[in-house]
Length: 161
Image (cartoon, rainbow, N blue to C red):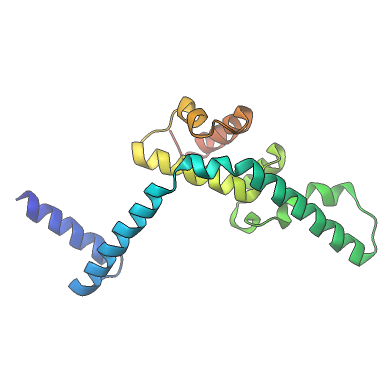
């Protein structure tokens, strides 16, 4: 009976993902196992170890980009352009306005924020909860104040409980 129930749930998952043949389902299952194995080999600590480096590189790149755009327009550099420079960074187009404001306030690049967001939400989905202390362990090399602010943002948004 449990075998039938698991098979039915598998078929429902296939149908939900648009799979209509057994051959396509087998390919889907192989790719699913492959994705799971890849995600296990890349630990969250590996991603976080590069977080600070990515932030510095992305910020310096955006500063050069903003500077070159301003020079091309022959306009003086304004404080406003410096404040909005985060919107030129990679990944900024993927974030909501509130998330961009959070990144600006914390001086975090959008790509770094996306990594932190991905890790935190993955942990929440995996365990059904995410405690603040666990986030400190996940991001031990990152400023705890930034992690606190991001955690509070997710909590207020209703993404984590």
